[in-house]
Length: 436
Image (cartoon, rainbow, N blue to C red; front, side, top):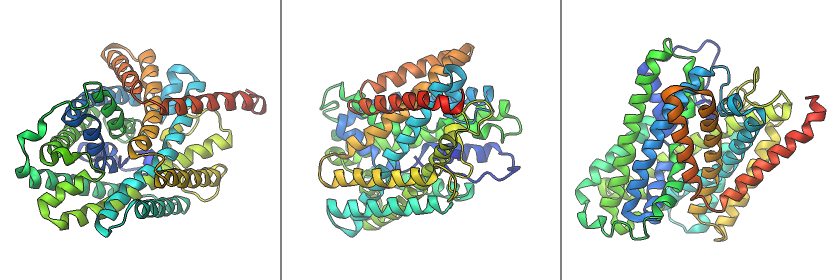
């Protein structure tokens, strides 16, 4: 979830230095890892027990297919620069607009969730119950919004440091806690039935977004045709090992206690004592602020494009769609203030509902996950229409897999449908004013 693609606000000065295979791999790994790993292994274990490992494995296969599809889209449509442009290339500008709206809604709904994840680790150290967690979460959200409004965006070097920190923490947690693993923790394997694996996959899907990083990074390789396959293969290998290692260790070591909101902290306690819990809390705060600020920066840029009436997002000649980062944090510009104000209001409402016990963590995770799945569905269906050969097969398989996961998303599908309808209605009303 710590995204180092342009939607996460990486600085992209004029004439950026070409990417090497090593640095490109590090950026892609950063696009796939983040605060989600602080929480999702526990939520998956809660949903499906040890059988959740099958959801992890299945989503890694889907992730590999998405990697192939987005790498090809990045080379086939280098000017589209983003998921909205990819969708519009095969399904038209209206579909591109729907994807843009779903992306924006996913960011607005996901920001308070990420802040609550970080807050859980903080209160694990400082103490305090649900109210304290919500207060810390609200404070993190407001700080991230202030950073976005002020134009502060993490450099690629800083993002790489954060990614390295997360990898080291996962390695220490896995290796240090492994001696506490017990074979008995794997039984019963599917305590909630086999259908629970699908529900676990719907929860985990949020950790498998990120391959759309291919679009903006493609132009920064000297030889994309030769370098991209190596970069994507290496990035997939690293993330697959980390995901599976953490998932297996969470179940094997924690057993029935794996259904926790702070699985990584619990593993670190077994590896390094209470010092591990403090380290996890510090990392959680840094990763939370970096991720939320970065996503809000990219979303604010997209909101400014929509408010400015520059045409359909991702369309020909338009700067970027959902993947554009430029100027996201500029205080001025139509759309920035309204979007950030709406994000603050919606975020505080979500945290308030959580504080009142009306929604739980799993329900909160489900909303942005469903909206981002709609984004992926638009891209993969578009790819199935525009690509050829083996990549077309991968696109069809990816789209079908996304549809299967969507089927387990439940009530957030109604929200996604409402966002889609609003995007369509708004576009129709805007046509006369735009002369299109």
